[in-house]
Amino acid sequence: MRTVTRRNAGRLEAQDGTQNGAIEPAWAGTPVRPSAHRRLASHRLAAIGRSRWFVVAAGLVAVLSGTALVLAMWSSSATEAGGVITTGELKAIAGTFEWAETTPDVASTARQSGTDTASLAQFHAMPGDSLEIRQGVEVKGSGENLRFDVEASWSGGSNAAISPLEAEYVVTNSAGQILAGGPSGVSLGTPVQIEGLTEGQHELFVVVTLTYPASSDLVYQASAGSSSQVASLPVLNFAAQQVRETS
Amino acid sequence: MKSSKIGRWVVAAGLALVTLAGSAGAAWALWRSEISVSGASVGVGQVYVSLIRLTPVVRESVADAVTPATLSVTSTDAVAVSTSSDGLAIPFRVDVKGDGHTGVDYSLELPNAVPGTVAEVSLFYLFPDTGTCSAVSVPGNAFIARPGQKIGPFLGQAPDTSTNSASGTKWCLVMRLDPAALGEFSNTATATATGPGGTTVTAQDQWWAKLPPYNPAANPPFDLVLEPLFTRSSTPARPAPSVT
Image (tube, rainbow over all chains, first blue to last red; front, side, top):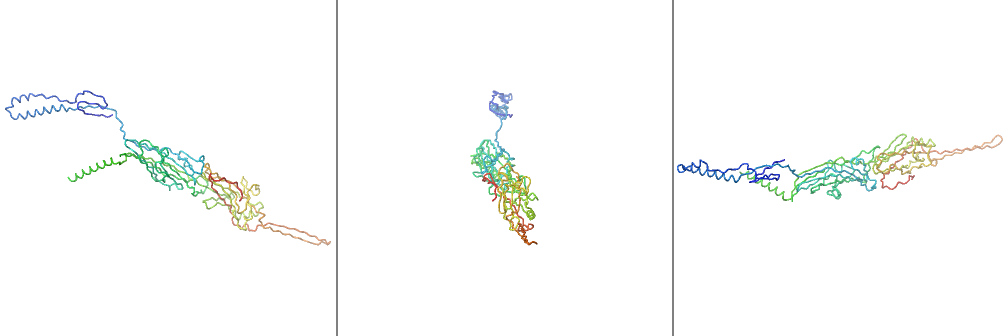
């Protein structure tokens, strides 16, 4: 709730739209009548010369008092329910995660896939294999005359961090259209930026393509058992920044 | 007085810049939101190839694509082969693993033997060890090979992603002297005598032997070499194993 006070000359409307009608003025001037003092002074006017200035001053007071009536102010107040001031918002949240094998020499029915990082860690990439990892990011921005930019970057590593695998990535929209990094992708660790997204909600995907070159040497284990070597992707940082759009 | 004029100019210039920025397409940040996504990692597949002699236990694992795993027939083995008509039985196991879509086939190769050694004059019988590896009971369908020949290919592990642990196959290798390759020695003795009645008596005997032309105790090692072949599902179908 907030109180709104409005001063008008002669009439007051409450903020909630109802008319108060003729509200009694908070203060209203009363016409000044000639006083007894004034009548007595007129009889002595000829005898007392400096009394003329007093009469002039009294007349000015009377004129000024009349003017004050014209400038009378109205004051009132009304209370209304507080409105929400929308100043815009920006959110970026991690969306779905999925991965799928794209190894060319493996039949599509034999390719592996998953929807969580645990299943991806269980996949054992061998020379000749390739994978596609999709990390969804939902970005929502609102506000007048606003647009927003997004940037995908990686901290703590690059392609060297996932050796012997190689990686490239792009940022796409939900329709698969490449918005940044295309057409062939950029190396892991290289930041990309998408500028000028319009207001609203956008579902973006950071699509990482992992490749284990077929020409790579096999990694031999010294003893039997499960493989312990893993290639960890660097941390994906996704930043959305809303900017004032001017023309 | 002078400083107050300068102050006015600074204020005016600032206002002008703000006005220009607002009308010339400049943009400035209002809100920023960031997220970090981590934790994704991929297993890097590996291979494992090992040849293990079971009596006595000697394991040789392949460490790279250059150095093979071998099973050595020692001078002690050479002596054992030479002193038994049945030869010597050597049980061994082949362990292989290929992660992901990589499979492993393998062959067993008998290199050319050093001349004058037991290996040179031996036959090698290879058959799956179903429980008892014995030189006495060599099955009729055993692979028979000589030095310089290769036996295989055999399936070690199929190229599928269902198995990421090693698969083992036990084999029995019987090494037996090849009679055809041994040196043959024969001797015939004839004795003739005349008896008291003037009767001539003649007796004849002979013996022969095939003797290895070597000293088994001084034989250099002879290696059975495991030769892995890594496969993918796109690899052509593996032929039936044979001796080549």
